[in-house]
Length: 350
Image 1 (tube, helix red, strand yellow):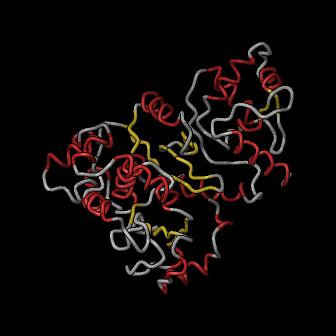
Image 2 (cartoon, helix red, strand yellow):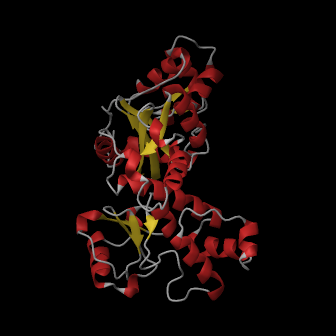
Image 3 (cartoon, rainbow, N blue to C red):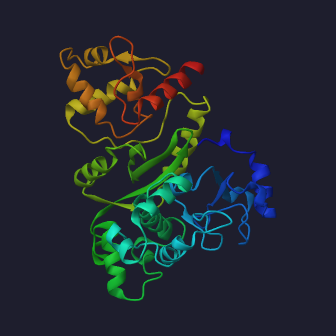
């Protein structure tokens, strides 16, 4: 949900400071300095105004990388926690990395279908999606928000060296002793009016920019791991802040071209196709046929469409500017509704 559907930020911050219960269900507050998100009535120490981001749902806060606060329990139904669910939520809070299948819930005396319905009703996500988000965001938080270097980052909270080694390897694919022998790609998530975007970069530039709900995202990450011979690690990168600024300017209609370094790995044909994409002017569109002609290969329309689909850097390499020959929208990994939004945005600001 975009900020336009939320109350004014000043109003929400005052509500957070005053623990105003009338705003329960209206917004959730993501605290940048801790990686935690809270309900308006949280009794924890209040952050500075500039360190708060606001979300319309717990689902949105989870998608952007925040973890539930252990003081105000934002994942629980405000005012009344079902007695049958309380024990399970307490267990998850104590062990956010836990994996629970339907069998495990049954063994705990909880009906899996009932749990699924509750999470769908109150948070719009499945129970398993919630557990996955907790595990992912815990890994993000240990490095991004705890401000520790990669190898020791996972040491906090583990009671044994073996536990640390297992957690590190599950997250990075490496043993701790191997962390200096592999190339590292830093990853984070940036919020946009069209939803969170997953960003990856190495020392040379941005190598991945995709909406977090794109189905091909996991495949793209696996491909890049092999191509770059690198591991993807939650953390910071010198290009992330500038990319965030440029994306914000683009969505406000203040930027028509990006000037941030990119890492584009692909076949010679793919690189030619992606180069042609970057030559399509802001606010204009081209057909797949025209794009094929731009690379002097007019018969390769289908291959061009396939290469567009393999583009890993959305918006900056503007595959959204390519449409069908008859003028209809077609083929965009982020969803046709996003493609229409981007094209409309550019037309308004030409």
